[in-house]
Amino acid sequence: MSTVILEKVLRDRGIKYKQHHLGVLVAEAAENDGLPADIIFSDMINGLLLVSANLPFEINPARTEVMTAAACTLNAASEFGCFYISPGRQIMEFRGYTPCRADCGDDVREQAAEYLVGKTLGALSAVTELLRGLCDGEYGIAAFDRAVRNLSRA
Amino acid sequence: MDMDIRNEYYEEMAEKVDGIMRRLTDGYRRDGGCFRTADEANPTFFGTLLVDPAQPQLAYMETLPTPVPAERRSEMIFALNAVNSCTLFNKFYLKDFPTADGRQEFVVEENSLFCPGGRVTDTDVSFLLASGMQDLAMYSAGFRGIAEGSVSAADFVNSVTRED
Image (cartoon, rainbow over all chains, first blue to last red; front, top):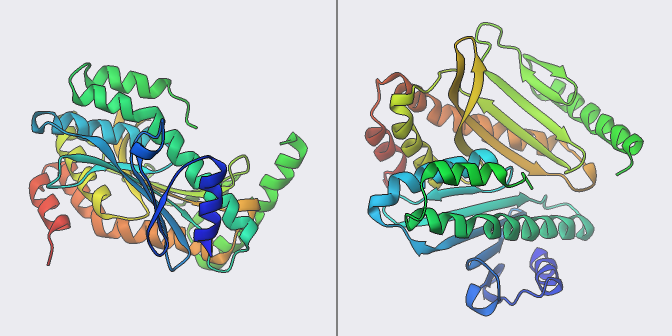
């Protein structure tokens, strides 16, 4: 049921997506101008709406420590979602979720889906290029921390 | 949102949460919309259940009582990242707080729950408390050991990411 609502929210925002499995919608950056990363939306059987994304650049092993520190900074600064580097992978990942109770009505599910999509796009749009710059060594962690502090806690 | 409606809304949600907290837990005190654990023996330890009417969600935050020394900051961040990669609902990060000695960093656990329309149920509060406390129970000893220097972050990360 939530998948239909999620699809409506994505369509209303003009986001192109594909249904990969039942309850799993994937919005690919290549198909959507301005989308900062491929984003996977999952409607879990227990009523949760989950979102996950792999940021679109590999982390140079020499920059792993600084990128891990950046993830910690972002997690402290944002009230939404979680950034981390999966052990064994040189990719920064993001996940967020909107618990949406199994017994709630469609109006609540739509609000929850709008919240999830809006917050995810906002969070990823705000920081993906900042993280890429840090990863590429364009600037250091102190400058990154200052930039994150300047972002509003949207 | 109109301020009067906002305040009324806020109070309604806080009252609702208060009633649920009284039934589900003990050892906390209410401070406006916040609910803090009454652990007077360890004043840096607190749990908060916050009701924010502008963005209707419940938030659970817990701060581990052991400060993280600057020389072990990198190790702790390494450990926090590993835990964040394998938990689903909660996230852990470092945050600095004022202390008697100035400011020091502590590990914070945070999770939140979207409550559209301000509707809060026993299930919502139970979910937040249970998932927060479960993760804290699993990882707090390791984090404390890293902060104190008695546990190596590498060993801790191996233990939490090991696939059995």
